[in-house]
Image (cartoon, rainbow, N blue to C red; front, side):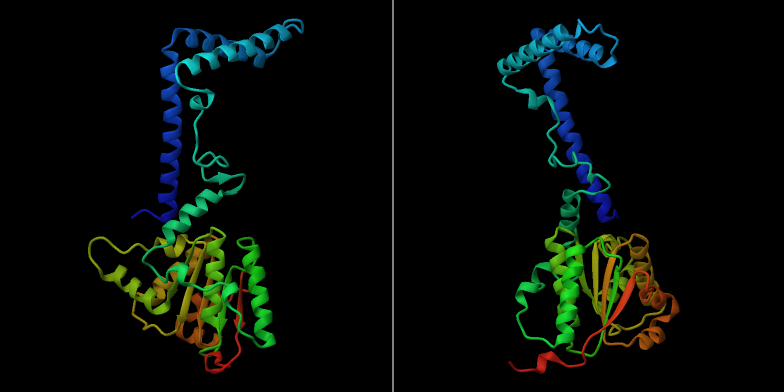
Length: 305
């Protein structure tokens, strides 16, 4: 099964080829007209002469004048044929990147939007149901206010953040899931792709992939999305040859692709090490690209306003 990024690339290629085909078809139609064909060929030969150079300075002004005349003749011919100059130029859906998906040295906005749309898959929680910073008006302890401010900064700078892996730890009701969901929604509104999935649902998906015959579930959203949120790691059952192996593979692929991941858990770092082993622990706790953030132990769900 093709990855989401490959599907987006195929969509862009199809859009690009369609735009170029239409322009070529229109040109071929125009070239069937004698006056247009004659002026078009003369213009192309003239443009080559001017580009190559070596023309006497006295010849240049008359040639430039003739070039303008030929363009006028072509415009009149196109008007007579029910077309204009734009019909001979590929009309790409994205003017910024020409349907290549690349703008400068980065992925174009159109690429990210297409990837985000595809990432709104059956995997995980619909991003549209996640809250935003605007939805959160409840009063918080100072420590949590500081954390919220830092996560706003994280969203503002995304994806250009040195820290790409965040581990939210703390007891139940401390606000880990809520804040992780907010970040996923904010990132999605910036036209980056986000997937939010519980550890239980993720583990169930891994089991299906490992055991089902025939066509496998599509796991590409887990590795292709710009931000993956795994909620409540540690609540899932550990299945031999499945849970640890697939989780490690997913996290490792995301690190290699320089993707961002947020994991929430009630486990302490020590408990994570005991449960998942050194290989996964070392990737999650790598201080060069990740941070473990301890949430307050207060269960804010029990606090009455």
